[in-house]
Length: 76
Image (cartoon, one colour):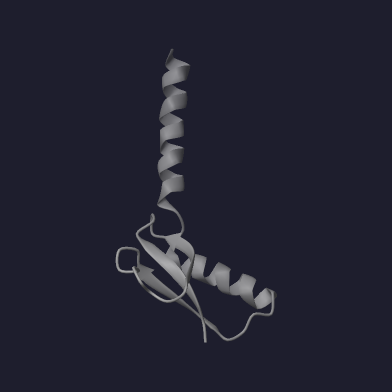
Protein backbone atom coordinates (compact mmCIF):
# COMPACT_ATOMS: atom_id res chain seq x y z
CA UNK A 1 0.00 0.00 0.00
CA UNK A 2 2.86 2.37 0.80
CA UNK A 3 4.39 1.70 -2.62
CA UNK A 4 1.09 2.53 -4.32
CA UNK A 5 0.82 5.84 -2.47
CA UNK A 6 4.43 6.66 -3.28
CA UNK A 7 3.89 5.83 -6.97
CA UNK A 8 0.76 8.01 -7.17
CA UNK A 9 2.62 10.87 -5.47
CA UNK A 10 5.55 10.66 -7.87
CA UNK A 11 3.28 10.49 -10.91
CA UNK A 12 1.37 13.56 -9.77
CA UNK A 13 4.64 15.49 -9.44
CA UNK A 14 5.73 14.38 -12.90
CA UNK A 15 2.38 15.45 -14.33
CA UNK A 16 2.68 18.97 -12.99
CA UNK A 17 6.22 19.26 -14.36
CA UNK A 18 5.03 18.25 -17.83
CA UNK A 19 2.05 20.59 -17.66
CA UNK A 20 4.35 23.53 -16.94
CA UNK A 21 5.77 23.25 -20.46
CA UNK A 22 8.66 25.20 -21.90
CA UNK A 23 9.31 28.87 -21.58
CA UNK A 24 8.32 30.93 -24.59
CA UNK A 25 11.87 32.06 -25.34
CA UNK A 26 13.20 28.49 -25.42
CA UNK A 27 10.36 27.24 -27.61
CA UNK A 28 10.64 30.20 -29.99
CA UNK A 29 14.36 29.52 -30.45
CA UNK A 30 13.70 25.82 -31.15
CA UNK A 31 11.08 26.71 -33.77
CA UNK A 32 13.41 29.28 -35.41
CA UNK A 33 16.22 26.73 -35.53
CA UNK A 34 13.97 24.15 -37.21
CA UNK A 35 12.69 26.65 -39.77
CA UNK A 36 16.18 27.87 -40.62
CA UNK A 37 17.41 24.28 -40.95
CA UNK A 38 14.70 23.74 -43.57
CA UNK A 39 15.75 26.90 -45.40
CA UNK A 40 12.62 28.92 -44.59
CA UNK A 41 13.03 32.70 -44.92
CA UNK A 42 10.65 35.66 -44.85
CA UNK A 43 8.67 34.85 -41.74
CA UNK A 44 8.07 36.19 -38.25
CA UNK A 45 7.27 34.51 -34.97
CA UNK A 46 5.20 36.39 -32.44
CA UNK A 47 4.41 35.43 -28.83
CA UNK A 48 0.83 36.40 -27.93
CA UNK A 49 -1.55 35.74 -25.07
CA UNK A 50 -3.78 32.81 -25.92
CA UNK A 51 -6.91 34.72 -24.90
CA UNK A 52 -6.10 37.66 -27.17
CA UNK A 53 -5.21 35.54 -30.21
CA UNK A 54 -8.74 35.37 -31.57
CA UNK A 55 -8.79 36.54 -35.16
CA UNK A 56 -5.02 37.07 -35.38
CA UNK A 57 -3.49 36.45 -38.79
CA UNK A 58 -1.01 33.62 -38.85
CA UNK A 59 -0.78 30.04 -37.76
CA UNK A 60 -0.25 28.90 -34.17
CA UNK A 61 2.89 26.74 -34.13
CA UNK A 62 3.35 26.28 -30.39
CA UNK A 63 2.04 26.98 -26.92
CA UNK A 64 4.12 27.96 -23.92
CA UNK A 65 3.94 29.22 -20.33
CA UNK A 66 1.64 26.35 -19.32
CA UNK A 67 -0.71 27.02 -22.25
CA UNK A 68 -1.22 30.71 -21.46
CA UNK A 69 0.63 31.98 -24.54
CA UNK A 70 0.96 30.94 -28.18
CA UNK A 71 3.66 31.36 -30.78
CA UNK A 72 2.20 32.54 -34.07
CA UNK A 73 3.95 32.06 -37.43
CA UNK A 74 3.39 34.67 -40.16
CA UNK A 75 4.81 34.89 -43.68
CA UNK A 76 6.13 38.32 -44.65
